[in-house]
Length: 84
Image (cartoon, rainbow, N blue to C red):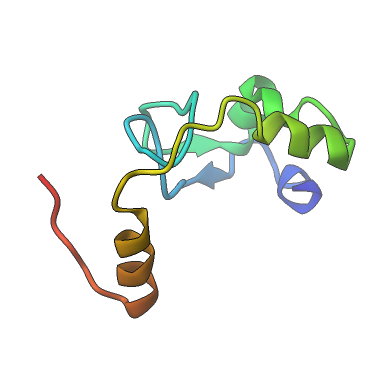
């Protein structure tokens, strides 16, 4: 994270998951961001302490989707799936 936060504020961030995803909580619905926006608004980045950062990430983690094992297997195999 330190290396990322050394980047200029205008650097575009293209996350793999955003609002509506089952993979996180308090995610923005925006499919992109910037280092500067995240630096100013992402509460997980408010601390430089590694242990506090990890604790912040583990608060209110949603349960995994029921088909998580199949999703992981498909991702590892490089299988594209369509979901409605």
